[in-house]
Length: 567
Image 1 (cartoon, rainbow, N blue to C red):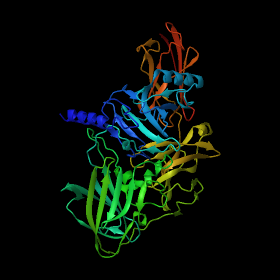
Image 2: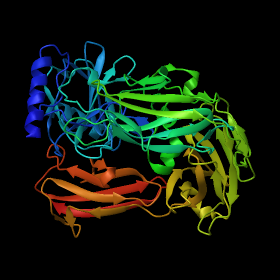
Image 3: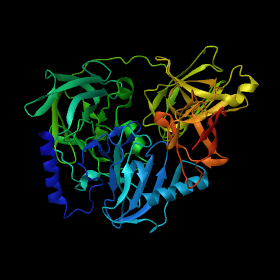
Image 4: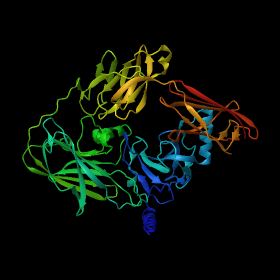
């Protein structure tokens, strides 16, 4: 019954908006969303909306307005297969994670892939080569690239600046009468003399919904003192979907007066990593909970903020009770409110002694060196000044350097830092195989951080603070056939498939040769899968074929697979 009502509501939306909209829907199925514009993601804001396809691949995708194909991209990661249509009104629509392009576009792309001998392409397309009219089928939906499941990622961008705009403001037939949900609030002391509930540490308070508003569980009045920051844990939801999405706007009011606000209308891709300052990154690193802050760090240059008073930081030292209110809305005007009170109460507190090397300033180049480590952090790489910490620890025998604990992984880096680590007892034969790894000393997990050996040191770039050391990668990638038995019997009629994997530095190159000619293999790294679809335009069929497949990693380790099969 609920589904029938939802479909009727969508049909009603079509009747209401269909005559006056510049854009029509990119799919003809109900527009149910699993992701919203500016939703919080790892290291970035979501740049569009994610449209559900019922778990299916192959749903027809339509041009939302007249225009021409301006760009075609194919990548094993990111957007996967993507189309960009430029429209006369100064916008570009984007369609991503596709399975296939329309036949004409598919042929054009494949010709260039074979010409360049590469799966990954990013092609600017001459105007008028592929003109489209509103409602033309341009592709089939899929799960390509870094997609977490079958869906259509859709965007509207300003053509001139490439800034993504909020698609939900353009009257697509989306039903949303569900207000954002609030889960908890975070209070943070932001000076040496500040405290929350008589402690100089952040404090999270769960909330409950009562009489139309959210309030703190058990309704405490929180004693605080000094400079305080507020942050809220929240998600938005759409009708017909349980997926967590992002809110549109936030307002913080103190004693009835606006103190801070932001609004998600558009942003630039150059700004998107400032998400790590927009959220409380330390709390996210420790708990995986994302709190959106209502205060601004000095290095945060994100342009979504509409009103900021005193950088959003509230100084409490007057002995009074103050009323705090959060107002959260989604793009369709559904609103949620959270209200609670704080009380100014002074208590002498002593911050714990912090052992650090020196103060690193966010708006300067910061350099640190020892006899076994060189580190350079570029200007604008941090959002605030930090008390830089460092220590060196002995490493186990299977490493070729000491462990270097470079500050804290709870502090984000906006730009990569340059680092050099001196090697210990690295055999000359292994120098080309050396690289850095980032080690989680709690779980024992480690991740490759790349790097090249030069005169006794390994140089690389760090995207995060943490514990680093030198190791080597001497193990070649693995190739497991899925379509061939005993290297001569084909088990699938239209394709060749292999599982490939690498233990450390990662897959760098894949080359398939059939009958002494380069063959296109599509790469799906999230499933460790490569696939070649038989192509009777480029390869003679009804004969026995010779296959040579070579997979290499970033440290030059290679694995080859040879087979003979009839097709």
